[in-house]
Image (cartoon, rainbow, N blue to C red; front, side, top):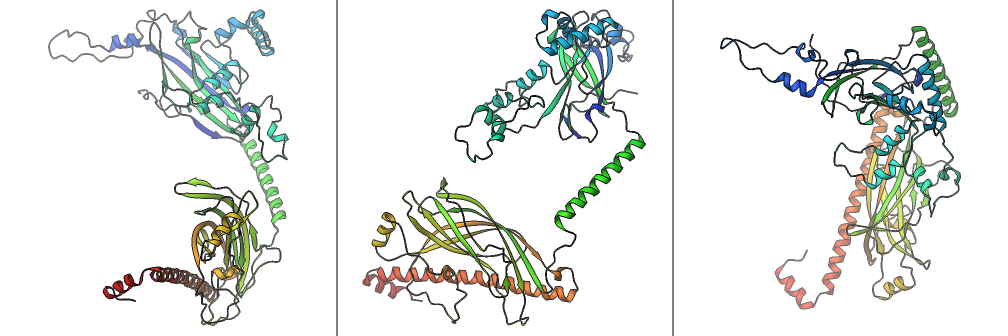
Length: 566
């Protein structure tokens, strides 16, 4: 049976295990294929011999192994296999030659390796010759993490971030309390130290690393660093995530390594998961333990939430809104803040603890394109109930409205009204992004603008609901004749709306009844949108009328003679 081809996928794989990592076992099989120069000689077609047209013999595997002495290898030196446990130390020939002399030991770890090598020499020497390991405590692990590349390019130039990341060792040992974890009362650190930046601005998940190496040098030249090659890198963190690079061979072909040297040797190696499978009794005991743990955790959560699910009253709709004032853009002055409140129409109510108003923080603007934008990211929560009292179709229910005003505050504590606006809460559940335009009242003449610039202050609305039709208005038509306004910027909202009602789960009749209420509420929101359009049209028409009155009389007569007036 032919061997599978070479595996070119040397990317890593990520595994998650709930078992202790000490049970991990990896089987590594390294085998020398042949010298590359010898392979090229063998693959060259021989000169034709014999009668013309006779087919030449195909090259078999026997000619490739017919010159064992030419490459300088012993027959038992061409193949090696080892089963390695997690953080199991296998010494290389270089480490044996280094640590067998006590004078070369400088650290406690070096002296520990010295004692272990002396024990190995007394017991007959090490069993491995080509396969060895570097554990998490070895110097090679620190140097490898410091010199690791970010890309696969040969001409890679480390960036500033790569250099700073290389200085950070992600280790479990010697974890001293960071500066940022001690100063909990500080919101802003104006002069952060380098240690503070390393521990707070870099993802620092503690990991343990292990390298499985191969000494692929010629026989008699083992222990030279230029022939050491990384066969596999294994990293494990505290969450049971195991990263193996390259991945276990499995059904794929073997990995290949081409060694540059006097004779460009070709090696192949296979990685297999040799961990012992769990016994059936242990697996059942583990499953019982996890079921017990999950059941206790479920009881704990039930104790926090409560056994009874909170439901609404029959015929009522509960509306829950998680909102955010994202940004304000297009305003004249800097250092903006937003004051808002929620108006509940008839048939709507809210809990006693619910706050229906709020004020954002003061935010400085930044230039984005042609506008100055202030990003608030101010969250708020609203909870309200709708109870249908009159089910007649002629009674059109109203939807809650958020009124807001944008103000500015300068260095001398002078505030100015930058604009008024409103939004209607969406009638459909889900995520909504709304951008509401604003306007502010103005006075004719330059005196009010000079007062606004030098001493602050500007015309304000006594009742903010005057942005729309106020709820206290009982007449048929609301006249705003003579009221001068100026268009300013806009405010962006993000709303996550949730709706809860028994009608969603009860009989179809009640479901149709609640659906009718929702349709009417949606119709009101559409009606309010239409009113906004009509109001904008009326303002534009009023401005056109003012502009026409400011034109010379002869120009108006000429225009009226050629263009019919509306």
